[in-house]
Image (cartoon, rainbow, N blue to C red; front, top):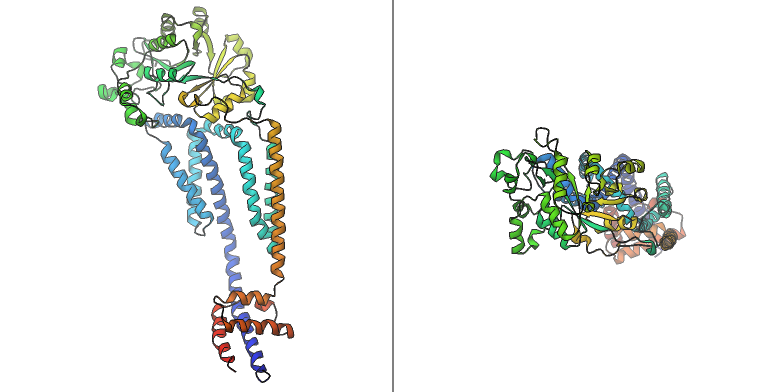
Length: 575
């Protein structure tokens, strides 16, 4: 072994020279390119995160807006004049964009995709804000129902992110970026720990203080099961236990009040077949004979607006196909037989209509002739209200506008019918002295929130769904929620502290290894006897001499070192 000492020293020095020389150049090139790309990569990644969270809010909005899908389609119909399901394309594009963005989060090919998704999402938000601005209230209302649970989910997600943050901060050198990331993480964590202080929900209550179940009004009957504003629709609603019926009333050419939601007959009748040249005419410009000749059910079978036609029996489909335009008198007679209340909104005929100045008289006369108890009729038109009160004082005067209590009393109004966005907790307390009906409530979660809030009556297009909600979906005592909140925060804090301690311990264990040992273990893909010998030579010779340094071994070259170990070193072993 003594005579081969010069060769051993030469081998070790040559290996170290190859490693430090070749990879020193590569490291300098990497630093130059890294400095150029870090800013752009950080910018695109920030934009990607913004797109992801914006899409998350957008998806949550459309998930909770299920209650008003029909209302959205109706708004689109009024804009375009053509009935179509505008929700489906939005839902499909939302799912595609969200999935694509989630994929980009774990991918590096996001420069073009991020920009496209971000622009598309912003465009969608602006469009919905212009078309359906009031619907944003559904997000705040839904948080009253989902807030406590979303807080737990968010806390669990941020706690899990602690593993990545700890690995980045503890293992690497302290830099401004790492310290900024740690500070941001701690601020978000602190905000989540204190978030329950801002969470309010009517469902956080003692079960003993829960008010009686709200009564349900069939809004246009049960339009998910039968064509809206038809006798079949109202009968379906009565079968599902509604206490009142709600309809939209217009006045025909000769003064007959009839039920029609739209300004024209195009969407819900076959007017295009019988009167093709009058499709765009106001529905009030048809006489009762013409209205009665129209079919009000075929459109429902054709369009299937709620996807319920497939569940109908043959007999039910035949009944739907034979529905005609319903008059107010027919609705009142049905309500009289069922002993239920009636509420309707009245649309004034156009100026050229012969009954333009007599529409209130025509409607009031029809109500009086029906023999229904006037106390069962909720009268909503504000026009000529004083005259109506004098002629029919028993009518339940109802306002569709939230007015000061003194003004309500002066007008003799005893009931309010408001949109659910106007029926928050303070509004409900404000309405304690009047009867309150809230519309349109189709989803069980919204029904549960309003029930816990103390609402006494809701109008629904889905009474068959609300019938299956005998109790609020969830209620919880404030003390119980406080206990869950504190327990979740303590568990999260313990997990995060344990994560940082483990990462620190793991990092300190890695630093205890000899750098040459780590480098030599990483450069070779396949172990061999020659490589093991070379490792022993370098490691043990480093102990006995001061040749080389740890810094020189911070990088390696696969081609140079592998070729040397499998070539020169193999030959030297034969000496």
